[in-house]
Amino acid sequence: MTDATQSPAVRRFGAFEINLQSGELRKNGMRLRLSGQPFHILAILTERPGQLITREELNSLLWPSDTFVDFDHGLNNAVARIREVLEDSSGTPRYIETVPRRGYRFIAPLTAFRANHTNTIAVEPSPGTRATLAATATTSGPQRPRIPHLREILVIGAVVLTFLAIGIGVYRRQNKSVKLPIKSIAVLPLENLSGDPGQDYLADGVTEELIGRLAGIHDLRVISRTSVMRFKKTQVSVPEIAKTLGVDAVVEGSLMKDGNRIRVHAQLIRAATDEHIWSESYDREVGNLLALESEVAQSIAEKVQVTITGQERESLAKVRAVSPDAYEAYLKGRFYWNKRTGESMLKAVVYFQEAIDKDPTFSAAYSGLADCNSGLAWHGYVAPSEGLPKAYAAAQKAIAIDPTSAEAHASLGLVMSHMWNWRGAQSEFQKALQLNDQYANAHHWYGDSLSVVGSHDAALREAKQALELDPLNLMIGTWLGLRYYLARDYNRAIEQGRMTVELDPNFAAAHLVLGESYAQKGMKKESLAELQSAATLSGNSPLYLAQVGVSYALEGKRTEALSILADLHKVSADHYVSPYAVAQIYAALGEEKQSFEWLQTAYDDHAVWMTYLGVDPVFDRFRSNPQFQDLVHRVGLN
Image 1 (tube, rainbow, N blue to C red):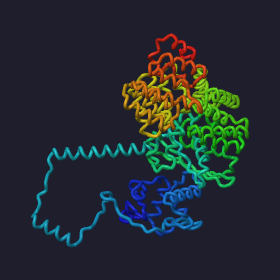
Image 2 (image 1 turned 60 degrees about the vertical axis):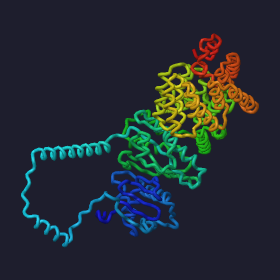
Image 3 (image 1 turned 90 degrees about the horizontal axis):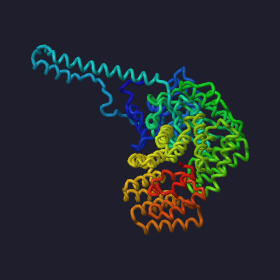
Image 4 (image 1 turned 30 degrees about the horizontal axis):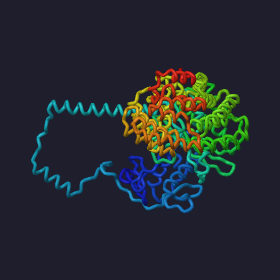
């Protein structure tokens, strides 16, 4: 290494600036996402511009001798990551030149300087300066030694002891952070290095499978897919991501499909110190992708040093016998299911069905098919009579094939709740959580089934657990607000709604629940604004548009509310419109007769949102009505 005078704090080349003290790379002042080994390699190369640095030297500097790493793949992937961020090319390099079979050389002009007030350099005074100092000392005359007062001695002693205590504390904290076991982890989205955006489904699918396998370890808290996907193609550093998600470590890596082969590189990084604990690369045939996922998950599990039971080890090592074509179709189905739009869920149905056609014993594909049909019915994209029977049959088949699948039991619980089978639904959710208590959706859906029957405290516990496992999941955050709303805790509902809207101002459901909460608080102006935003963002979905009508009705704007009703009647000629939503508007208008007529239609139609009848504040004015009570009873909510 060079000494302090030769190793500047900040180095500039072209539009880029690397700061060794802050660990940041910037382009035109904008921070880029480059951390860990790629950052360290760039720092080493820019420290010796124009010089060849061999692969062996880089390996010895980057990875301790007792760390297992596939050096070639690890180094290749790290340099590939640097080039991606710098927009450089190995064929016509502007910054990093590859010397075949030997190493790398930094070839760009480099400007180096020190950040102000960051390094202190001792400089020997010049002869003239020494003469001036000597003359000053001579003319000042002999100086009498000064004896410090007792008070000064005590103050200085206290300061020394304080700094000593701080230093010891920092030392202990640093050593403690290194030695602490990893109890929580986030698997970041694998980067698709194939150069084909059409392969994103594969990188995302492998990421989700790794999360699912690791979540089966009871002693390890694993962040769910939706939250980590918010950091896909982001420039946020690993420590910042870990802080946001509240985890001890992260896994990051890349995936590349080349013909019939697939290459995956993964590394485990301790969040507090940005320390690389483990790194490995895998090169397998596409047909062995399931086995590859198992290998990666087992390697990570061994490094995090948590207690793993024999059953958990068996589950990690388990490799399903699924045809490669079926598995690829399944991954595409999950990719589109996770988008949660009507169009994407319909695409997902096609791919899940394709996976089933190619392998009729593929339990996970049936579970995915069940979730899609449940979601289409719940969001009003299809009639309950069309979506729910398909969802129920698929979930039953998934469990028949694999009774140990938490996802399958949760899928059956979801459709049972839509079918008003409350006991059956809660039993299935409980089975799912016994099999995998880290399945965030199971907590989320279980909380909803508890809320609609009035078990608000238990519902809130499940909703909060779901959010802990998936802290950036917008739907889970929104439904925590709904839990408060249905429990009549409108202040907390509003607080939670605002937090979710802040995470993503374009998420329609968050505006919906926030607007409904404002309405029940009597905040008419705020309610209408939020509900109109929700309707617009949803593409004027009938369920969302109906809530604008409810807001108008509660404001006393009868003409506007009736206009919304007229619009819904027109839409119903071409698309399914839930009778429950129409009943809500009439209830807000105080039209009891019409509201009951539409509720009866909703009952006959088995409208999914009838699940909220027993706790929906819009119908509070009818709670004492025997006809309403009878309807609630028939739905099984009392």
